[in-house]
Image 1 (cartoon, rainbow, N blue to C red):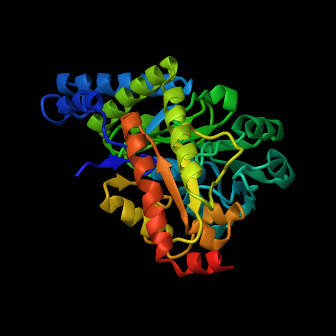
Image 2 (cartoon, rainbow, N blue to C red; image 1 turned 90 degrees about the vertical axis):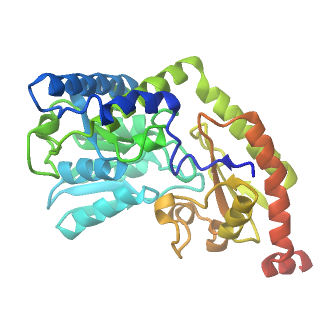
Image 3 (cartoon, helix red, strand yellow; image 1 turned 180 degrees about the vertical axis):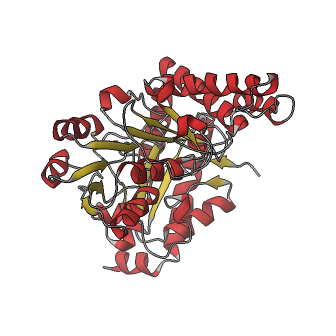
Length: 387
């Protein structure tokens, strides 16, 4: 059976160039990057080259990059490392659970937390952030790109608000890195999180940008790895892979790969909406990353559509992979004002570097057919048609 993968916001396949770059560091070049002998210095050089590549992707200095195990650790390091009991923290209602749960933990240890809303396009109003500021506000954490809708927040404007108030600013850029240009200096952030497996590197590796001079309390205590900001022997193969993925991502952005993906995404979106009634784009009207569309198909259950499409060879999702199996509808879509049944009827399509026009044609031939079949057996659809 032909299989097409359109769930790249959950995870991406490791690119062949990335795998080849990391492969030697499992066997031939196995040294501990903290050792001073030849084997260690060989891997240390590879780690520092990767650090420079990640820094280049983000417009940062290499000394400002801290390697982590991924986005969840990075978000927790940035949030728990920058705020403490008694501080006030501002975040949004559509953050990834890695941020929302980290902020919830801060609240449990004595922080005040304000959660600002979004509008029907999934956008935070920067003025809501401004109005939420207090004398004891220490940190603002607003994501750059939403993992479910792909909507891009006005992080540069929010960064200016934080700077004017003398407040630290963190942005979760896990779903933005490699898809849109990022310049940490233009954003004005003090911390920014990325994850390798969202940009064609393997799972289990990520990085946090920490602006020079920003005091960060580490999560882990041990050796002086990563300039004492993240203890633990470096994952050299993963770090090398992330560095190579960052190089490829930057080269892709320079040659306009984002425009190619946006054109494929738009073709998929237009084709579905032209063929399927009672459907709409969640986040329509907002700027989005080029690879993502989230569409509600009224009168059906989204999980049923995911299963039906998978049986035909198309992989999509109902939202965040880490929330798979959740009974409650997406907190992101509910925060945007969708009705619970509409949120449950929503599907995320997310493209990757490997996606082709033929893949999109395959999806366009399949999705309307599966939606129609599910609606035929849906009591909700039968009632809607009869009225």
